[in-house]
Image 1: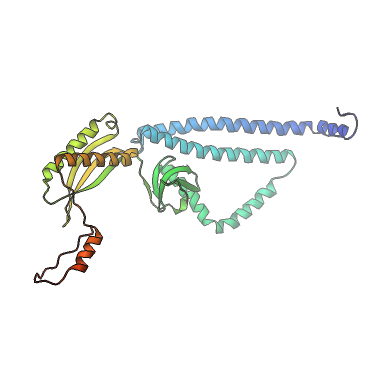
Image 2: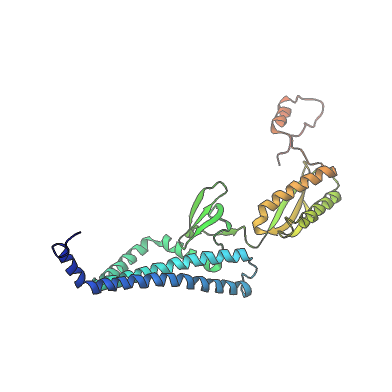
Length: 313
C-alpha cells in the first residue's frame, strides 16, 4: 500500500485539497448537464406528441393514420432531442471553461469570424439545412416512409436537417443532401391507387371482363386478410387504348398506402385466375426473332401488301 505521507502522493493530496472546490464545481456542472439532457428528452417527447396529436386532429394532417402520425413524432422527436442535447453540451462546456478561468469570449469571436468566412463558401450547406427545416415543418416525409427524391427511391432510414438516408429494395443506402430535394414523392401517405392496364384481344366481350374485374374486386375486399386494407374495390374505369395487338382496359382500386405493392400483386394474381376460369384470352405478342424472320424470308409475290411486322407496343 502506498505511503500517502511521502512524495509524490502527499503533493497530490495537497493539490486535490486546494482544488476541491473547483473539482466539486465541475462535477456539479456535469451532473446538471446530465439531468438536463434526461429531462429535456422526456419533455420534448411529450410536447412533440401533444403538438402532432393536435395537428392531426384539427390541422392539415388530420387524415394521417396512427402509424404515420407516430413516424412523424419519432422523426421530430429525434431531431429536436439531438439539437437540444448539443446546446446543453455546449453550454456546459463553456461553463466549465469559465470555471477553469479560461475565457471563451475570444474563442466565440474567432468562431464568428470563421463562420462569416465559411458562409460565403458554404451556401450549399446552408441550403441543405433550410430545406431540411422546411421538409420537417411541412411534413413532406418521415422516417419509415417510402419516397422518391433526387432521382432515387427507397425507405427513409434516417432524416436530419442536412441530409436524408434512403435504403432501396436492393439494400443500397443512398445519402441525399436536403438541398438537392426539389420534388419529394411520398408513396406511403394515407392511401394509394392501384393503377393496372389489362390488355385483352379484340374479340373479347368487354362487359364480361368488367363483370369479372368487379367480382374479383368484391371478393378481395371481402377477404378477411384484405378487408381492412382495401378502401375501394377494383373496377374497370375506362378503355385506355386500342391497338393492333388488343384492347387495353384501365383497372383502378384504392388501398392503404403501405399496401400498394402487395395489393397490386394480389389483384394481378386473382385476375389471371379469374380470366382463365372465364375463358378470357390475353393477347400474345409475337417474338421479335419471328418477326425478323418473316421480314427476311419473305419473297416478292403478286400480293401488293407485304405482311406487317409484329407490333412492339
